[in-house]
Image 1 (cartoon, rainbow, N blue to C red):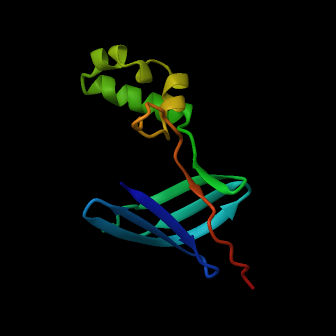
Image 2: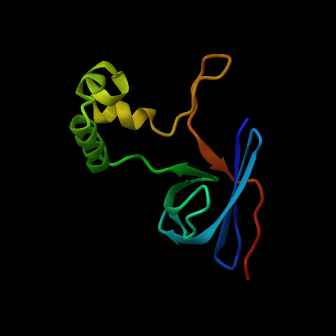
Length: 129
């Protein structure tokens, strides 16, 4: 079982803990809020997460932002250049942007055969002064 937990401190520090089978990793970065988007900038190359990570704030949840059409087009073009054109035609997920965006952010099926979206849920609130 794998668990992600995100801690946002009042000082602008974000800590993302990843725990899994025989692994435990802590990534530290800075966080900013821009409208309904939370932006976390990780600046170390040895951490599990690096670069910019964006989440959409929806109620008490942080959801992964969907892949844009430009990013999808870039992915398909790079797969075609690498010679995976036949794979794109065979996989239903890669056939259209709509199918790809619906499938991104989902996890594999559980023991009941259901698929759910990944998100981070609010568990504790602290008021910053």
